[in-house]
Amino acid sequence: MRTIQQELQKWMKINKVKQRKSKHKKERKQKQRKERLTEREIKELMGVGRPVYRRGKGGAFRQR
Image (tube, rainbow, N blue to C red):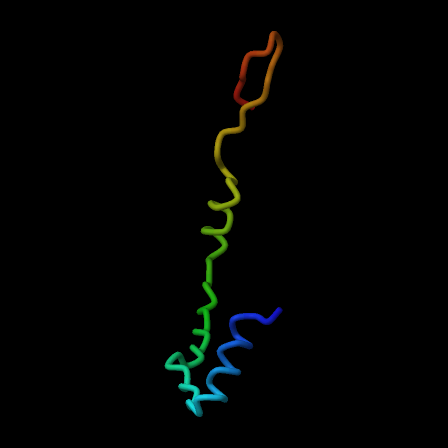
């Protein structure tokens, strides 16, 4: 049993049809710019300086 691709190639050979070139060209990957973050921005993303809550006695949330 042949695949459709093989059948097409066989048919093109019999009928002397030239294969079309693909219109799609390889796209180049764009270089990603490296993002420069300040120390302050990194700390903000990590959550430094935000209030911290823990479970206290009786299961209630309390600020630490």
